[in-house]
Structure formats: structure tokens, C-alpha cells
Length: 366
Image 1 (cartoon, rainbow, N blue to C red):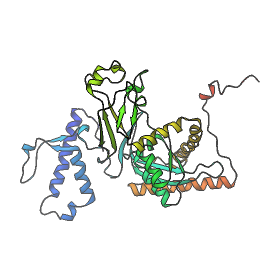
Image 2 (tube, helix red, strand yellow):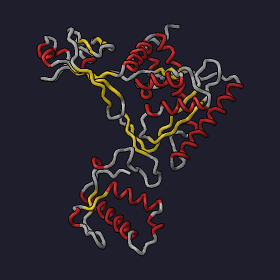
Image 3 (cartoon, rainbow, N blue to C red):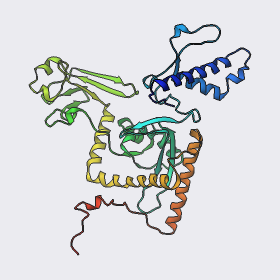
Image 4 (tube, one colour):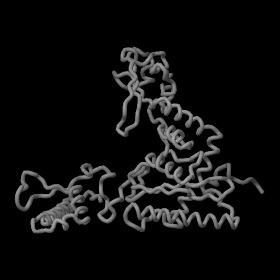
């Protein structure tokens, strides 16, 4: 639950609401109140919400014995807990807030569906995975694969969106489950890849055996340090000598740091090689033709949203929401099996009227 930025009058009202809530919570702490009343789920939720959004301020005015009266401060958004820990609704404690690129925001859940994509058989949904909205897609790839393996439905190739791919998953999916993850990898967004003539990662030579990197000017790195980032991922920090970088005539093509030398962050060898192989395969004509088969999942999501209300949660809580998603997947499968027995062809990808104006779609004289 997020409180909007308010003007002075509404701020005063919000402070009064906070004070009323604290008064109720204080009353529940009285010795005469049965302990089981304070432990009821609604009271626990109210206490958590008030701790998130309100604060008695300043603390020096509060009394340590007797009723704890004092002014109430409404916490600004920057002081709220991280989205994964912040209660967004007192009615659904599992729902979470999510903002994606492009400004799309919502409060609730995310659903991840897997389906077969053979050319001849009916395309059936094989697994549904539901999470709070704050769980990133890359965190779902491994549990989805494990669920498919447990149901003896693991594919040899899994066509996924870029959000489900990272270097570690490319390796672990193949080693642990025999599943080849195919999808676009996240692009390198460093400025060197955006400026013509700049020295990007691809222009450095990596000597894995001797744990060193050679720059385009032939200088050898000075340090090679394995590290673990804030997400628990292993990275290799590589630095060059300051005297080499400061004297380099091509320094401006390599780094924008005023005094520090060039610094590289590498994945471990197996992950790095798997990532490079995935990029090469996806950029090839064969890889592009294979990945086109994934387009059907967008139609599946559209069918779930438009026909079965996939984007509207009818229940509260993650377990019931997941049950709704499973029921929708079953309904889609029933409809597709009936269509397959009736030999109804699958709809082709539609071309919008605007796209039809492109030269490739324009018709010649009749």
C-alpha cells in the first residue's frame, strides 16, 4: 500500500489517521486485553502496515510508560521497505508492486507459462509458475526447469525471453537438466559498445589458463580477482596497470576515467564461453529461424488475457491465484485439443494495417 504525495491539508489528515491507528494498537497492548486478540492476523497486518508508513516523531516526546502519545510522521516513499518486503494491500498480503521499463506498473503477481511448440501437434501448456510481482524472471528459470523434469516433460530446447537468460543459467540448465536455453542475451550497455572505434570487451584477449587479459595495445593486466556480487554471482575483476593506461596514446578510446586504469568484469570461463556461444547462435540465421517458434507464446498470453481473464486475479493470496492460473491453462489446453481434433488450423500472425503499408507488403498492379 503506497500513500501518494499529498498537500498540507491531506498530510494533516494522514497524520491523524496514523495517530488513530497507533491509538488502537496501544489499546490492544493493555494488560486487560487477551493475548490471542493481539495475535490475530488482522491486528498483525495493521501493526506491520503502520510500521511501514507511520512513525511517532520525534521519539524524545514519547513516553516509555503509560499511553505513548505524540506527533505522527508520515514516511516518504524513499523510506518505505524494498518492494519485495512492502505490503501493498491489507487484503492480499502476497501481492507486490512492480514497475517495468516503459512505465508499466501493477500490484499483484506474475505468471510464467511453458508450452510445446512442435510444428504438427497441438501446442499445449505444460507448466504454470506463479510468483509475486517482485520476483525477477531470471529467478524463475531454474524452478520451472525442475518442475518440468519432475513431470517428465523437460524439453531438449527451451525458447525463452531475454529476461530468463543469464550466463549461470546457460551452464546449469545444460549440466543439471540437459536443457539447452535459447534466447537473446542481455546486451552490453557500456559506452564502448556505443562509440565507433572504442575498445569494447570483444577487443581484449582473455588468457584463462594464465589468468590474465591482453588489451588491444598489447598490455597485460595486473590483477585477476574473483569476487561475489550483491546477487551472489561470481565475477572476475580484472585491472590494468595505471602507468600503462596513463601513457597509452589510445586511452580515450578505452576509458573515460581521469586517472584510474581500465577495469573489466568477466564471468567465469564456462559461463563466459556459454554466453558467447549463445550470442553467436542467436545472431545466426539458423538461430533466428529457430527462435521464431517462440512467437506463439505471445499468442498464448493474449488468449489467456482476452478470453480467460489471466491478468485479473479473482482470489486473494499466492496459492489461490496460482490455482486460478492452472485452471486457465487447463481451459486453454482443452480448447486447443478440441481444435486439433476438429483439424482447425492455428491462426497465423496478423499484420497490422500500419505494417501492411510497408513496401514488402504492398501489392503490385492487378
